[in-house]
Amino acid sequence: MGSALIQLCQDAAIELGLPVPNMIVRASDNTGRQFGGLVNRVGRLLLRLNDWTFLTRENHLTVPEPIQFPNAQLFVGSNTISGVPSAIATQLQPSTMIVSGYGIMTSVRLITVDRVAGIVTIDQPATFTGRSDLMFRTDTLPLPADYERPINRTYWDRSMRWELRGPQSPQSDQWVRSGIVATGPRRMYREINNALRIWPAPIPSDFGSQLIHEYISSYWVRDAGGAAKPRFTADQDTCVFEDDLMTMGLKYLFFQIKGFDTAGLERQWRLAVQNAIAVDGPSPTLDMDRTRFPIFISPSNVQDADFPGSFGNR
Image (cartoon, rainbow, N blue to C red):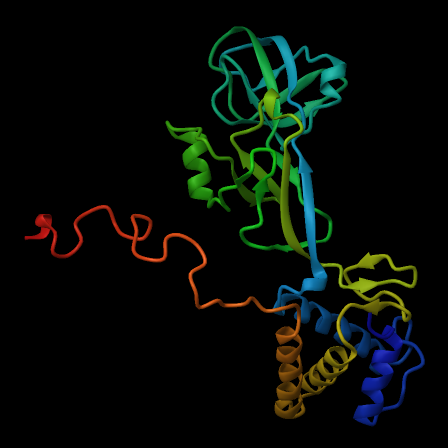
């Protein structure tokens, strides 16, 4: 853990030959306030420069149980469903659920819920008039509040011991949700609206399934009590980055915003950042011997047919 905000700014002021501020967040002078704004900018820049090991987090998601609504009354061409019991309506969450059942098209999403009147709105109309057993299935799970960005190839369905396929592009997601082939053996995901949207949507037998992924946290600051947050808001706040990275970055941005020559300060700061990245966690060992089968060309890395010299190309 680094030094407090006030100490970082005082160190930078001393090195720049400026008056040393006695407060930052509530400073009455322009230099103190400017230091406070710039040091937060340094932290955000460092946050995006590397997948720092000390900001890596693991997120566990539990697939919720679908909500059953038996014998619902549908009307062809209508986007509303009425008569929803209060016990069911209180459990429904708009935008995070899709609705399925006879008379409902594939991947129809729940838009609004009037829990008092017992009326829900869906984004596509029913295709017939009559009674139908409906199921509200949660396919959109919220990401953590401190989610900054994903760590690739860490998305897994631990219950099935399968890696989640993705992230799906909007085009491929619509292909499985709206096309003829809507399901497959593997669960897929995409990020949308700061949430993880999975497909196929969970069915009752999926209840309790454990999904997991890793991400980089945006909470790089700690308050005096140790609670994490995304920026400095008090003079005694500390951060997870080394003092040198913060003070050197602060001096560089201060010179930049004043219109001074920043070439030397920028070079020093970027070198310090590169050195910090280089020692952030161990490096993998690259073995020169055989580690696993196959070590030669196999069907996994050769195309099926029509490569040069085959009968098809003569």
